[in-house]
Image 1 (cartoon, helix red, strand yellow):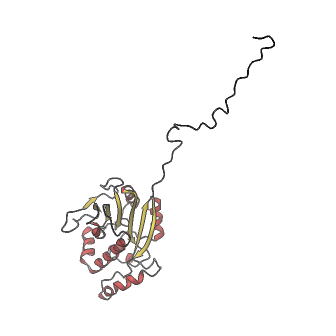
Image 2 (tube, rainbow, N blue to C red; image 1 turned 180 degrees about the horizontal axis):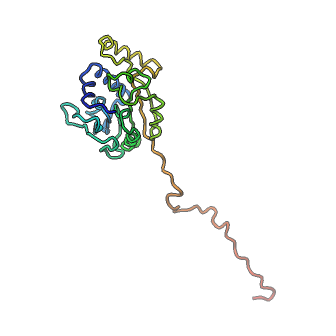
Image 3 (cartoon, rainbow, N blue to C red; image 1 turned 90 degrees about the vertical axis):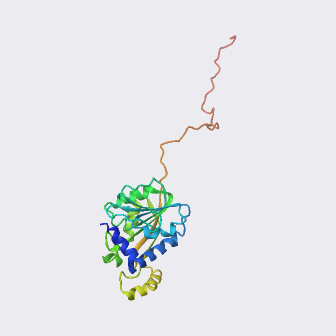
Length: 255
């Protein structure tokens, strides 16, 4: 189930809770990807709130938004980089992306496997991707007051298994967003303390979202034999198997 792009915009840009969630998740992304100089950075779903820090130095930034969700121009006051696309047909060349971010793109997809196939296709060899999804054990997935309360929440094991089946290897996994999904001012004032405390607790159940970074695994090509003929074969054994003809016996007086 895709949320409407206007609902997503209002949450992340016009509500205190959404702005707080945006900052927490974006700071986590910047901690592992501090720069993207001369790289192509792609976001899918509603990942544009996380991409703004890369606009100045990246070679290209693209915000893909699925058709059922709708699209909005982004970023405000700058040339638009957001694109409406089909869930399983992204307008990006194969292997063109250096970094890929999905938020509100996998858990709401009608066909998650097709989305992951597109992720694998557009990501270049050695590229990295980050998946931000609702934590099944967290409280954010149990509240429909935020976008993380819609779609299919994941446990870490479920997410890693699905990513592995599509050719991705987990590089690091963590949970984040430890503050409760509440608009009450008392929780807004305590948000910073809760986030700082949550980072030191070894519990994936506490965080509202799972944050998983993966790399693309490219299988080695399999060949039935030598790729090309040996141009200069070894001559060590040359002549061992060749029998020399014996002289014939012609008897006494033979000439």
